[in-house]
Amino acid sequence: MDVIHLHPDDNICVAARNLPAGATLKAGGESVVLAEPIRLGHKVAIRPIGPGERVFKYGQTIGFTTKPVDRGQWVHSHNLINGEFSRDPASATEIPPPPVPIAGRTFQGYRRPGGRAGTRNYLAIISTVNCSATVARHVAERFDKSLLNQFPNIDGVVAFRHGGGCGLQWEGLQHQILNRVMGGIARHPNIGGYLLIGLGCEQTAIGHLMRDQHLVHIDGAGHPQGPPVFSMQDMGGTSKTVEAAVKQIGQMLPRVNDVKREPIPASEIVLGTNCGGSDGNSGGTCNPALGVASDMLVACGGTSILAETTEIYGAEHLLTRRARSASIAAKLLERIQWWLWYTRTFGCEIDNNPSVGNKEGGLTTIAEKSLGAVAKAGSTAMEEVYQYAEEVRAKGFVVMDTPGFDPVSVTGLVAGGANVVVFTTGRGSCFGCKPVPSIKVASNSPMYERMVDDMDINAGTVLDGRPVADVGREIFEEILAVASGKKTKSELLGFGDEEFVPWPVGPTL
Image (cartoon, rainbow, N blue to C red; front, side, top):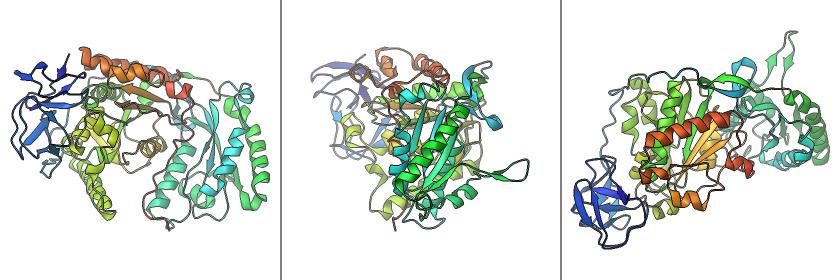
């Protein structure tokens, strides 16, 4: 296959491999001779397009030409801009019927108190402020693989460190977000036990965190019970805090190790979806294949989360039509408007989102990127829209408001309860996200073969004629296998300790 023509209305097609000038292509009923070389993932006009006219991909507008484009010419940043246009975000007008149920699918997971389902079993050291991050790291480093060999059911001891915790408004948006993230990690079903370490004078005070996130409960005798807490200032400094925390974790290890995997319905999977380092073929291969897997999970009664609001912008009208109600659609539109305000505040535009690497891979405008990105959401009804790191409770397809920067986005998804992540990429992002396994799906075969040590699944086979649905079923089966304990490539490579990045929204004071 030389090119893919994604929709009958498209006046461009996308190169499925590197194509030389002079090659003759057939797409959309047109025979086209290339006027110049076209790289994998890049667009070529199959009909003449006048200046200021719309360019269509996926049957949707991805921007406007800035000069005349003849058939066979390259369409990219030199002759295409996003532009301003109405997308008619109708609300709840095309609600899909429920998918045909898929019964009987299970995975081998950890059943937690309260019925939550874990796919991994970590012990967490949560640093409440950057000032205690080094201490948290020192504590975690004391528990290497040789020591943990005595506890085979524990996947690791992880220090969740970040760059915030002070210089923020008390109970302001940044404080609320950071509390939600830390509370979400503490409650996460992949965390078998945790402790908190702070400096002692930070704005994100530990006592407030525990009350705000309900990390303290009352036992049968009426006594408050909460996690072990260490304040460096109260403990007497770095060394004393490290030694005390190491001793505490040593006491916790046998209890955290005392778990066993058991069959759990696939309905208990909460899937976080993310794309990073996308290219011009992501929206035709890996993202729609993940959409198929998302639909299958929803048919099992599970949950699939679409994130990265800055990569929904330009395609939000496709989601609002699928909203279960007009009020749910309104939540998404409100988030889009917030982002337009927020980016203007800093003198930038959402259309700056496609990165240098995205553009090298063939993506030109934010509308093009978003239309391909939302394919991860499959085809079922949109059941809810959540704030960043808010606990996801709804079943079915939902949206979480996150930035497009991958570590920040996935941190929010994980804090919201995702217990498996599928991460699609066209350029070759290397990513992991403890305490949750991250399955990497490549959009094209050359990158997959070049980076096979990092990629789990090759969706580039779609460019060779394999049906998208087949790749989607492969992703779905991989989700169940990974949820049952199969290690992903990123886990084998040790990714995940540095990718915990809560969203630092707002000013630093």
